[in-house]
Image (tube, rainbow, N blue to C red):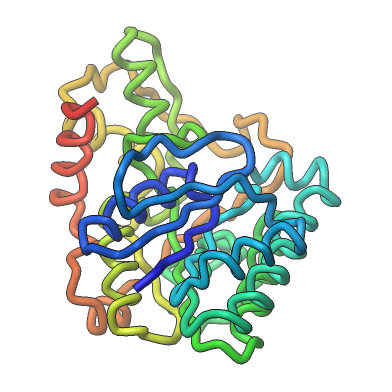
Amino acid sequence: MKILITGASSLPGYRTIIEALNEDYKVCGTYNTNPVSINHKNFISSKVDVRNYEELNRLFEDFKPNIVIHMAALGNPDLCEKDKNLAWSINVQGSINVVKLASKYSNFMIYMSTDYVFDGEKGYYNEDDPPNPINYYGLTKLMGEIISMSSNIPCAIVRGSTIYGFGPGRENFAKFLFKNLKEGKPVKAVEDQYTSPTQASLLAKAILEIVEEEKSGVFHIVGERMSRYDFAIKVAEALNLDKSLISPCKMNEMKWYAKRPKDSSLNFDHTKNIIKTDFYSTSKALKILKEEMLEG
């Protein structure tokens, strides 16, 4: 069985590759800027821009993946808001290209989405709640969901929230905390914004379970609802860092360019009944985070 993973140099992409290789899949991971540092007999990496249809088509023709996991995206909300053309070209046109080719060459597809498809007015959103993004990043990711679900290939939409862990990719909140607290630097964490932090290794395990059984639908693979501040304290405690360096602040104090949802937490009750993997336990997630830290 062959799996193609786009956005392989992201943290969730990297962790999903590791999990797939552990399950003896043959994996091809794509990257655009940062090469993927994995040396394994069943893994190949390919420099491909998802915006380039011809380039992507050649890869599909050569590799012929049975499964496609589409994770490539411009995930910085502020940059998406500042450069909407760039965000659209990667997150929407790129998804159109991937879905079109997956429909032609593959049997099943997973699209990686986000809690930012919701407006944050209600919080604890169910899988079937109507999305209503308040920033351009969320809008482009919602478009990716629609594109995927409108195709003729069986697919799953997996929504994550504040994905964290150690590994490659842009700096996530846990890595930011570790770096600064280890150096004795004070950190501010928002106490009036709520998400459902998702540990990347547990996300990868749940995604592989979806792959193995080709489960279609919308899935919330997330942890427990908490404020950014509460999450920061829990991470500091788990990694034996000085939590006194963490101080609470308000959303209106942050110098964000794009709007953020106040409470984009996701309800995982439905998904938990379908997925056997324990992706939601905070204590388990933080234990894995500490193991990742010790592994370097």
